[in-house]
Image 1 (spheres, rainbow, N blue to C red):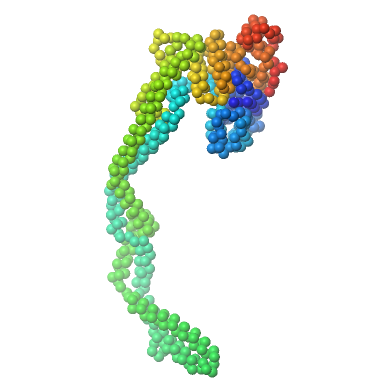
Image 2: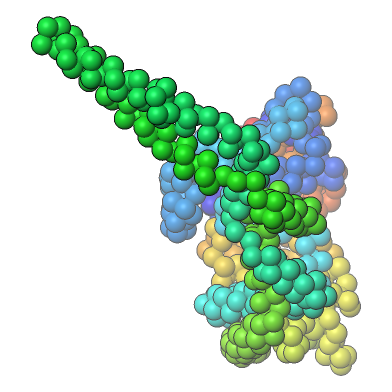
Length: 566
């Protein structure tokens, strides 16, 4: 329930604040006074689009703030899911900066526009004049029937099956597209895989070949150098090893007389072992390395083949060639076995489609069952609104195809005269008839949706007299179980309010005042007779307000000053 609304620097509003009654709140005012502006501000607070024209003073922030009582609405899970602190009395704030940036807060905690919009949709249902056009919306008609039928659980089950169905539809389409593309690429992929497989690729092979080729290309010089090294080390009389061995023996002989000689001998022995190992390795390598033209040619040809494949397939090394081969082999296998995968996916799709159709059939049965009771409730309300001869029917037909809401097409058929064939209500109903149909629908839906607050913006357009009074009775009846805010131009409706606000313009600013009981008589009389309030209008206003025994109020020329002005 909306307890307080504050608006600052919005359109023609400089600053206003209003405290609302928990029952029926009436808002009236002359055309152009700013009633629709007030509605726009509330819509902005609840997550509406900022069209860039919100600010009255472009140098200041535009701020709209509303305080709501949430006790008993079951909104605690929403607050927990969105990491917000729940409070029975919660304040929503929307700020538009001069730069056009929008900021939203719930109890001073920043939230996203989506979060604000979702919370707002659970707090207030705004019915503006243009919403009569939603009767032409298939989605609205379907939602209306489902709401009254209590199809929430059926819709959840259908939505799960439909999501699986559409997911598999996309998968089958993707597989078919891939198969079609694969058939075009199959010949090329097969050639690629065969060529790279025949190449007997091995990771690291190119580096090994390049290293061996470098040795083979310089085999003669390497061999000569290794032979010279070997000769220098172990020549019979002049080799380094022979000379060092003699030196070692000499040091051993003087060890008894020169203690350091043993250390020198040990170090020479270690050096001799290392040099012997070098000599052995050089001897072995000199015998192994040989100028082998045949081997050189073979390795050169292999390297050329590897480089040619890399250039052909535009990769950097044989590792990437191997990856390309394996990837292409997988694609080729997918093409070869693609029909099997498509068949499996199609079978799963058919199962999902059948499950979705079964769920849609249950929805259809529930909607068909609820349709007559729904239509009867609308007809009863229309009769109260002076349309006893009106015929309203709900037509639920299967379409043969599945959509997000099921497999039905739902139409609301209407005629104001029983001797005529009912037609889609959005096509044939006049403005006044649409207003009455929408009120009947809103009254029925509000009862089931259990929203805390509903706002009507001149839903009574196109009616007057006794019908206006009947509309007021229905709107007042709604306020017995929920808070109602009604912007109206009809005195018969305005007289039913628990609280009456007047919107007016003064010095270019839109303001609002809550009327006292006596001021209401004057305002209702003004609505009845115009700017010149007659005694007859005063008397009629008193009758509408049920105050025929009280002394007549003094007629005023504008919004009274004794009320609470915000």
